[in-house]
Length: 154
Image (cartoon, rainbow, N blue to C red; front, side):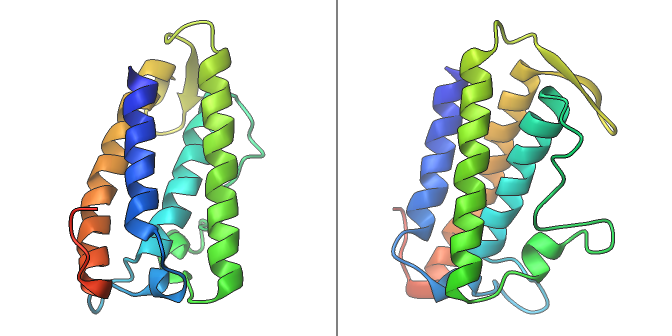
């Protein structure tokens, strides 16, 4: 059930971005750097963090789009270029694929990992957190898409 709700939230993000290329980098409003492309980049890093780094214990799974020197790089550096869009979607699809595989292969939802900020978290907690994370950002995506081309309620 949790994996299904997360899949629905991911599909909503994809729908909000459908048919757009350069427009994905359109900012919400000055001075914000929030954009659909930034959301894709951010959520790729979020998935990588929780599933690869925390649950799978892979410390080499560093963020792809932000860093300690550029903590908002996922949004700030989202540019309107075909290569940036391709890179973001490729990273997001790879992260989702890893997350889905990890979830499907886990023996139960009580598998745990260690997060530097939250402490011990379970797969169950991570799935619920990701559903919340996507739902919040999909609200942003609704407004961004409407700003870009007037599309509502995809």
